[in-house]
Length: 288
Ligand code: BEZ
Ligand code: FE
View 1 (tube, rainbow, N blue to C red):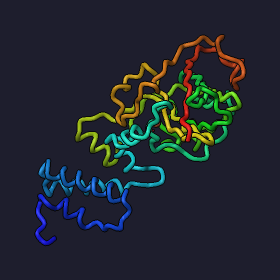
View 2 (view 1 turned 90 degrees about the horizontal axis):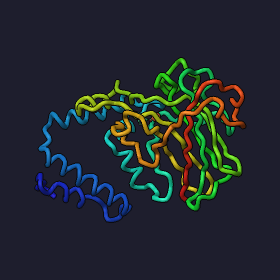
View 3 (view 1 turned 120 degrees about the horizontal axis):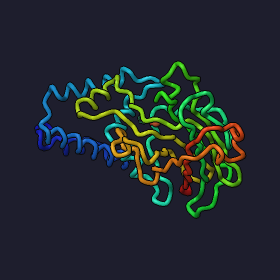
């Protein structure tokens, strides 16, 4: 096509795609460019605004490292990561929620009943639950990868004061599907704002806060891997999570219990003298 116009450029783009190309790629690229062109036409995008967009992408690329995933963070605060999660969530299983950039592979083994709080201050939380299939049957030997921030609101990879794997643990449940561990009550924290994503949040008049949460990746042979989070029901940011990760079935009550109610069978059993918090969160996995 020689006479390309603002009106026909989208169809011209689609006409340039080969008939031999992968059909799914054709669908995705055609729709992506349709929306991109419609967006530019809708807002009458100026050259300066186009340059700002390119500078944003270049800024993300410039600070991207193994530990800093600014493009993913951009997807998170724009709601894209959560939208993709929800599009592929299984209605009978526990909801999935954002992975975020702070998961670390190779976490040390944490026995059922183990402790991640160690010497850290802050309220103790005992979290437990059962990993089940959609019929309610426990899934033996499921694996649960757990991570969270320290009481200062920082993940280990953001904080020189913490060991690489502090507040990270990998637990394999027994035949009863039950997991349990003690930790410190997670705190609300801000996503990183010192890069281009911080500029977007600022420009939109948005705050960078996430409600406090525990992260889980739950895996078992024959089941879909679930990436999810658990939130306490009294967190002030539940209704304004900057990465759109909250789902009703992930919001749990953290009950206050007296030290005498601390159960047996935990690493800290017999050594707890202060009241503690307790959350029961069962996880349902969908079959693969
Ligand atoms: C997190 O929960 O770790 C997280 C999720 C998305 C963006 C930043 C952090
Ligand atoms: Fe997090």
